[in-house]
Figure 1: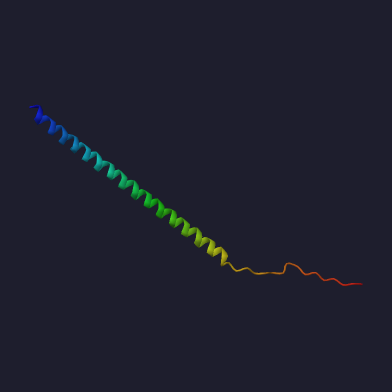
Figure 2 (figure 1 turned 30 degrees about the horizontal axis):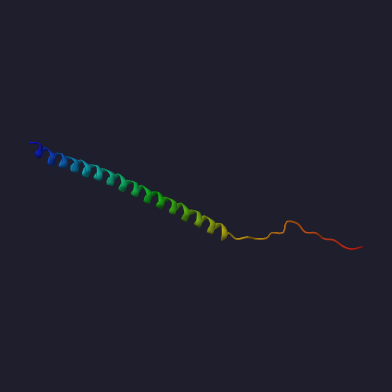
Length: 74
C-alpha cells in the first residue's frame, strides 16, 4: 500500500504546483497589462505636452509702440 501512496502524493503535488503556476502567470499577465496601460497613458500625456509647447512656439508675436519720444537739441 505504501507504494501506491507515493505516486498519488507526487501527482497531487504536481497538480498543486500547476495550479499555483497558473495563478502566478495570470497575476504576471495582469501586471504586464497594467504596465502597458500606464505606459500608454504616459505617452499620451507626453504627446499632449509636446502639442501644447508647439502651440506656444507658433504664437504670433507683434510689436506695438507704447509711446513716442521726441527730443530736440537746443
